[in-house]
Each structure stands twice: as structure tokens, then as C-alpha cells.
Length: 382
Image (cartoon, rainbow, N blue to C red; front, top):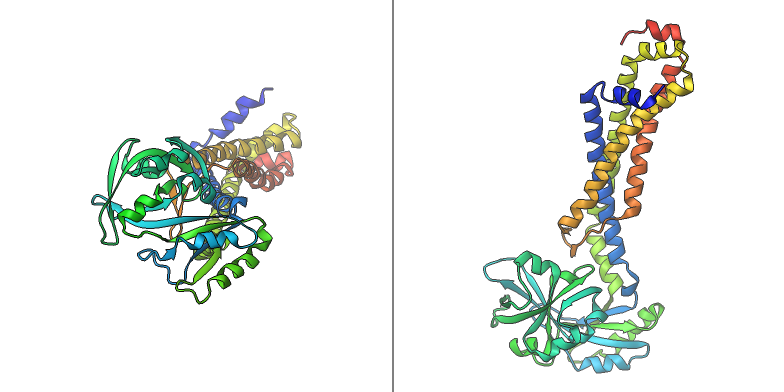
């Protein structure tokens, strides 16, 4: 006897119940996979190996509106043992036209952008050529998308510090991890001239040759400028990321709880729906026993029905969880914007979880049914 037509007939016997199981599992698997993919993306970005060797140095009185770290300090930074390089950065918060949303502008040495940010790709002008054009700028991909800018556009940003406006010509697009795609990168000299802030920067990225020596190097950096007109404070880039995670710890815990609660509640719903379905078919299953179907065949049939429905719902939920992040970037409150990348491992876990829910949800009701004597099953109604 062909089992597939029988399997299909039983699945569509009660379409409302089947749709309820399908939709509930698709929704719960979407939540589970999506939220855990967000967590995975955060871990991959915030604890990437490239940040382990970096120290950020800034003045003790640092304020984004008052950039007072002397650029001359960088030569002294490089003389500290185990310091490989030191790159300056001048940060300015601006606005575009009438928008109230902050646009972050960094004045840097363009050729060293890859040393301070995780850049995956640059379209347009090469970073090394950016310094040849004073007003040229490289713009993060997501800023280009948000404001509908194009390479070659001339934009004017309004400084939030009350100083003169800043104009740039977009010469390239930057793709990168973390917040690298949400920043405008300009020539440091040009930004200093416009802001009348020659010789001063916001902070410096310092690269150390051995991550285990970072605490020692940090102490030496701070001691070297103790009692100077501008004293400095240091923080490792990893510690900076840890501080971000601390701010959103409650959100991360909530993500995990929501994902687990969604799965648990769906499991109970699936178990209840399958139990009702089997109870309604008890007499039918008893007839099948009389016709020669073994307990094993009936058990496998019931389990297959359940797993087919939950697998289809799980696939729909996992697919949705993988597609949505690719269509729209995610911003976690109190932290940097986060691009969520689909995680194949978590997607596979989601699919396996849907199969497990179908199997476990149907196992006990099915075992209870097949253990009944055929005569008792046939006499059972509904």
C-alpha cells in the first residue's frame, strides 16, 4: 500500500488544525533563529580577533565637542615598547540637511583606514588615492543607502558644534563590519582646517604586537604623559566592546528568553493538537490494526504526519529569519548599528528543532494509541 497518499490525507483531514500548527511553528522558529542569529552576529563582530591588539588613547577631558589630544603625542606613542603603530582620528558629529539624525564623520589618514576599522570592501576610489583630493570622502555603505547618495555627489553637512558647515565629494563606498559602514571618512588635514583644529585629534588607535602585553603597554602610555598639559586615558578596544555588551545585557537575556519561551509554548501547542487528532482517529487506527497494520507501521505513520507538518513550518520560519536581515539592517538600542548575517549553523539547529518538536510532540499520544487493543480502539468514538 502506498503511504504517501494516506499521509497527505491525514495531514489535510483537519486543515485548520494543520494550519495552526504550521503558522505557530513558523512564527516560533522565526523568533528563535532570528534572535539567536542577532546574538551570533554581535559575538562575531564584537569579539573578532582583529580587535585583540588595539588600544584606544584619548585625553582625560575627552568630549566629542572638544578634541584636544595633541597629534604630536602619536610620535611618542610609537616609541613605547611593543607599540607597532598609532593612527589619529578626529571625530565630528554632523547632520545632513534638515535631518536630526547624527552623521558620524572621521578625519583619518585614508591609507590607514584598514588598520583601525574592519573593512571588507571599498568601491570607487582607492583609499591610498583619497589624500590627493582634499575634499574627497569615503562613505559607509548604509549611509549611502539611507540618504540615497551616489559616488560623485557633493554633500554639505551641518556641524553640531556650531562651527562652519563641512562639504565633501563622495569618491567611494566603504563596506565593513560593526559600525564601519555607518561613518564618513575624510582627510584628517582637511577636517582640521575646516574646524580650525590644527594639531588636535579626538583619539588614537594604537596597535600592539602582543595582546598579552596590552595592560603593560597601557600603563606605560598613561605614565608617559602623567603631569603633561594633556594627560591621556587608555582603553582596549575589547574592553570598549565589553562596555557596550554590559549596557545591553538585559536585551541579550531577553532575546534568549523570548526565543526559548516561543519554542516551549509551540511544543505544548503541537503536542495538544496532535493528541486531539489521534484521539479523534482512535477507532480508525484500530481498524487499521485489524487489517494487518503493525504497531510499528501505525506509530511511524503518526510520527511522519507530525514531523512533516512541523518540518514545513520550521523551514518557512527559518527561511524568513534568514531573508529579513538581508533586506534590512538592525540597530540595537544603546549600541552601534549591527548588520545581521544569516548563520547557517543556527538555521540548521532551527530545522532540527522543528523535527524534534514534531517527533516528541507526537510520540506519547501515538504510543498510548498503538498500545490499545484493536477491539478497544474500534469501540472508541472521537
